[in-house]
Every structure is written in structure tokens, then in C-alpha cells.
Length: 164
Length: 432
Image 1 (cartoon, rainbow over the protein chains, first blue to last red):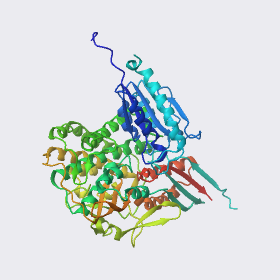
Image 2 (image 1 turned 90 degrees about the vertical axis):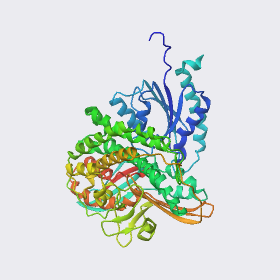
Image 3 (image 1 turned 135 degrees about the vertical axis):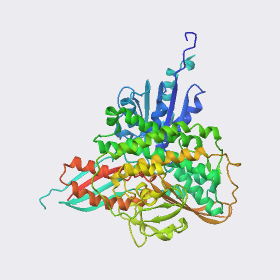
Image 4 (image 1 turned 180 degrees about the vertical axis):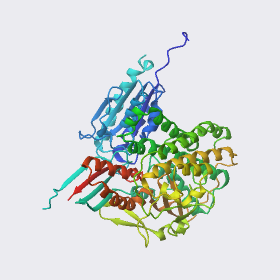
């Protein structure tokens, strides 16, 4: 046992959204761009945001980074960061999801069942338009660069390999 | 001015209902004057998106309409295309499609029963509160749902937005050993489903029955998923191709969505209650026995008891999945050959929430000229409004907050998947 190398932290990035709901796709697109920039030291997936499936995904992970569209009244494209491992997410911001049992509920149910990953970071991108469509609003499109950069920074702090 | 001041209450979201819409109830004294369920947007965007696309793209595009029931959209799409091109998928390929549908029913129904509906009956605000007192029960729900996920992941190619379904069959077939690998978990799931039926049967149900016109598929010897004739308890018995001749979509002022009606009749009801009540005799012996033991008659007209019916259907889906896996022999080819032709094709399958109708007109190359998609929730809208009109007067003496909660619960009975159409559901009671 003592001779085994230290286990690599299990890091998963999850982009959440609906590709046909305009700005709701922000999380998916950001995740896709993160995936292009990381080389195998973490997994990146796209997800609809269905809560029970999310719980299953993050049950065994050390660190989860979620990217989702939010609606709080802030300027479109504003990027917010929440540490859901420490405190509940502001539920009203995440109601844009097509699924009512979604990210905030999955976080709290995981907490109630003592299944939260060690670290669960959620990036919210303030969205403008949730109508049917396949294009991001300009401000949200512009914010992609910011959120991708911040997630990559977060990954570099969490991944020992990438610091060498 | 009347003695009663006008009060309008708005709730930003109707929690635990998929998507976004609006419920508006206008009261005058103890009279319900108006009930409007507003769903803002039917899948017209997708119908437009499909125009000009190749027939082979329809299953994947329509699967994106709903994150909860992508398999249903795929199934209705492939059956419509196969109908247009004059081919029939049979044997083991057909059985695999039933198995995939079992997975989706298990996932979708379990999500609704445990995460959304059960807390209503047990006096909890939500499943998080329920989990604090009954963690083992909630874990059972999560594991049961996982059993459905595993079927969809194996056959669908991935868990979210399955991609392995194609017109004519599948892209890749599972090996016998891969399916057999699901057996142990499904046996556990079948036991868990039976426990679920017993658990929900003990919940308190209001005495509320309606004389519904149920509409569902009916097949000569199967509980319906993909195949059958459209029947009702009012004597309707038609092939799917006659859907448009018998059902109409009416524009209603308060909603961009269309209200579906049975011509010369009006509102009708699709989904688990309809399916069960029109097909009790097609359930497996185990599911029938569990239903009887739960106190369900072969016809159920109480929408609150839909939680029991969904649980019986989870049990059936586990039972059926095990049967299909047991008899599975991989077919020679993953899909039968398709030769496009100019035609119109019709597909209607039993999504977890009820019949999902697709119609495509195609040219000789297989390009889609036009598409029509009618999701189950839009078919139930009129019935939901009528039920709320009957239900709300019984609770008018409750404090406002409790009345709103009762309305929310009542809407959840129908498991409206508004994500097919729109996002939030706002709730408003106007005491004029």
C-alpha cells in the first residue's frame, strides 16, 4: 500500500444546458472549449442538468466544476462563482433549467445524503435569452472567454500534474 | 366593489414541474371563474428546424426536445419514417427498442415518483427534506432510477441524448453478455419497484375522481410502448394514421400552445392513468397483482393515484426488461435497409407522460418537407384545466399559501413535461 503513488485527484467538469434554448447552451459551449484546452488530466462532459443523473456523476469525484446559465438580473454575460460545497446555491438563479430537479436541488440532496464531492464549484453565466434557438446572445458569447479562462485557472490549481 | 378585495398572488416558479409555464386561477367568492394553464411554446421551432433535413437526422434532432424523454422522441420519429418507407422493424430489433423504452420509463417515472411527487403526500416541502428523515427511501429511488439509466446508456450509446438509435434499427447492437450484465441490477430494481408500489399505496389520497376520456395505444398482446392502435374508453379505435382525422389542435387565447381535442368530443387524457386503465389486462401477472394489492381497480380515475400507477408501470418495465434480456439473441444486422420514397409517415409511441405523435412528409430523396409533433403534455392541458376547476373549490377556505401548495400538488399529478414546450411555470390566483 505504502509504495503506491498518490492517487490523482478525480476532477470532472460538467457543462449544463440545452443546445436549442439560445443562451441556455452557455454551459455546453464553455465545456466544449475547456475540453479543447485540457489534455486528458480531467474529464469534461456536457449534460442536460437532470439532477439525479448529476448526483450519480459527482458521487465519486474529488472535485466537480459545473458551468450553467443563470438568471439573476445581473448584466448579461456576468460570470459568478459559487462554492456549493460550503453553502447552498441561490436557487432562484438556477431556475432557467428545463428540469426542476436540477443543479441546486441535486446539490442539496447530495448534502442531505452526505454524498457531496469534496469540492463542488459552480460557475454561472448570466443569460439573456432562453427562447428556442441555437445562437448565444453577443454578451454571453463574449463571456465564454472569461468563464473558460476561469475554469482553466481553477483546474491548474487543482491538478498537480499541470503545475509541473 | 364587492366585499372581497381583489387579491393577486404570483409565485415565480411552480417548483418540481418540468419546465416553465403559467397557471392562472380566477376566483370570485367560492366560485372558480376561470382556470388557464399557459404553456408558451409548442415544439414549432423543432418542426421548422426539421424542414429540409434528411430523414435520418430526425431521431437525433427530436431527441433534443426533451431531456427527460429523448427515447420517446426517437421512437416516434423512427416509426414514422419506417411507416413512410414501408418497412417494419421486427423480431429482436423490435424487442431491443422495447427494452430501451423500459429504461426510459424506469428513469422518468422514478424521478417523478421519488424526487417530485412523493414529498407532496408525505408532508415534505421537497425531496431534500424527505431525505433528511428517510435517507434509505430516497437512496432506493436514486438506485432504481440508475437501473433505468444503465439500460438507456447501454442501448442508447450514452446516458444523455442517446445516439445509437437509427431509422431501421440501431447503429450498434449489444452483445448478449452486455445485456446479461444488467440482469442482477434489474432483479434488484424489480424488487425495489414492488416495494415502491407498496410504499406509495399507503399514502393519503383525496377522494377526487373524474370521468375522463382516456386515450392510449393498445396492442393485441403487449402493454404498449411502440406499437398499437389508438383507443379510448369512448369507443375510439383507429390506426395511428388517422390521428389527424380524429384529433384537432385548437388555438387558445391565453397560450401560444395549441390545445388538443378529440373531435366532436373535447378534452381527453393521456399518460399512465389512461394507459393503465385501457391496458390493465396487458400488464404482466406480477404488475397486475401488485396493482390489486395496492388497492387499484383495473380502471383508475383519481389523478392523485397516478403515483401508484407510475410505480406499477416501473415494476412492469423492470419485469419486461428482464424478459427481453432473457430471450435476447443478437440479430444478424443492427438495422434493416431503408430506401427512401416520397410519402407521409405516422408515428405514435407511449412516452412516459402519454402518447407522442409525429408525422413527416418526405420527398423521394428522404428530405423532410414538413413535420408535426404533438407532445403528451399539450394533449393533457385542457383536462388539467378542467380538473383544477373542479378541485380548487374544495380548498378555498385554506390560507393563501396552502391553497397555492394544493394547486401545485394538483398540477404535479399530471407530471407535465413543460420542457417540451417552455421553461418556468408561474402560478397566480386572482380573487376577484
